[in-house]
Amino acid sequence: MNFHRIADQLIENAMERGVFENLPGQGNPLPPAPLGDPIEAFGFQLMAKTGAIPAEVQLKKEILRQTEHLRTMPSGRLKLEAMQTLANLQMRLAMMLEGRR
Image (cartoon, rainbow, N blue to C red; front, side, top):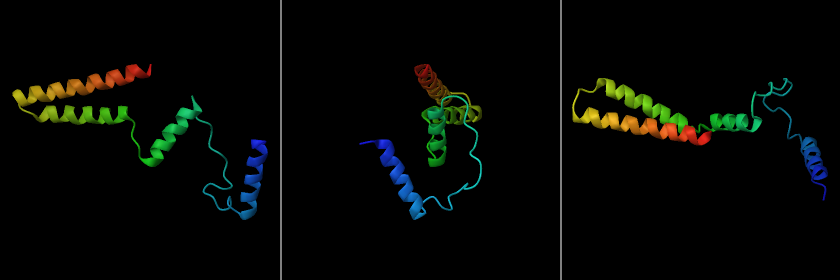
């Protein structure tokens, strides 16, 4: 079987049924192609649309929250524990980023 022919037939059938009518953006030019890897760009767009947050971004948010929390804490044992938590978060982020290289 020729998959291109099957795909073309499915598209033609959908067009005859009007499936492609009144879609968002109809009649507008396509946006410019993203710079860099198109697969990666598509993945980021998909994550943004679904509300998914990459693990690196989540860790960065946790690091910011922990840093702000530390600024308000008085000195003592609890502050040392919070500093250790921050250091662990920073190390996890560094390891995650290093693994991507």
